[in-house]
Image 1 (cartoon, rainbow, N blue to C red):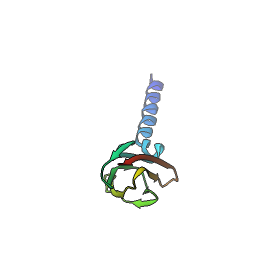
Image 2 (tube, one colour):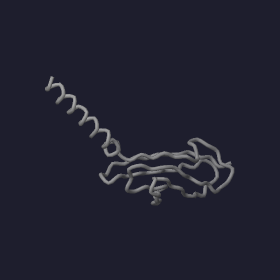
Image 3 (tube, one colour):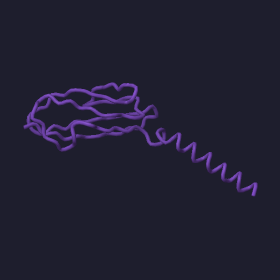
Image 4 (tube, rainbow, N blue to C red):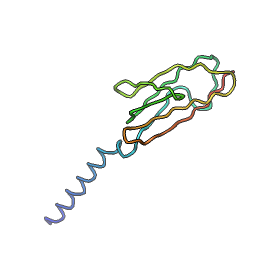
Length: 107
């Protein structure tokens, strides 16, 4: 019985450690609130906004952008007529990287 108690405690400890380290293990994450991918814009000025988690560097079309304490970010872009591809790139402090591409058509 004592052995099962130690085993259960050990499994709970490992599960708790993995739960607490989940964001370090997953790497950087980007979510975009506006605009949606494959959307159409009527204005040449577009506000891009979203949330970034576990990032040390966030870039929008190879320009650094900054987040608040909660990870929210926002920036404005000027679109060219036709198809525009917006590139978001996030890196964490361990060198892991993620990229998100958005396609927006300006009419």
